[in-house]
Length: 176
Image (cartoon, rainbow, N blue to C red; front, side):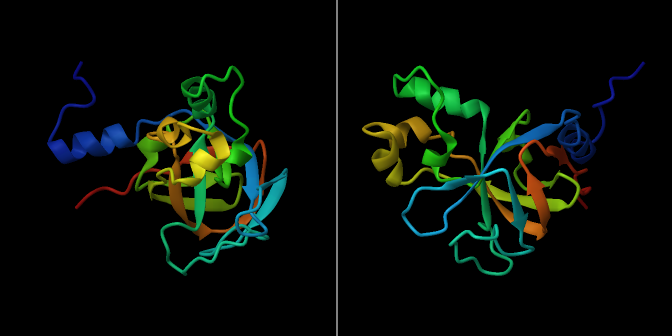
């Protein structure tokens, strides 16, 4: 029996990128109705195609790469540990829109994911921490967030999104 990942480099990479059989979950949703104010936690939200979350103050450009931000749920405890705290960080303090569990978000860069029944995001890049992390988390907050800042995404298809919705990785497009 042949090992299923042997082959030319492009086909191997495509198969490896598509080997994400697990499903994630939306754990938290937050919007910023007003700039520099605390995030508001929601149980559900309307995601606006090629724009933002309804009610969020963000000014985004159509086709922009940072229409929505995501952070890894499993990293909340890690960041807290780096800061000497025993409880996971409150997601609203990280200033990201969505908290996702069960998937390695960094493995999704340049991929599309379906959230719930309707929403499709294209993961566009890393969301690096900013100096606000020192304000939010205290001394060392910026460095605690390095490598744990999450990802940015473009909203390919909007719709209703709820806490508890499944997050599924869509198949990677074959490289020419």
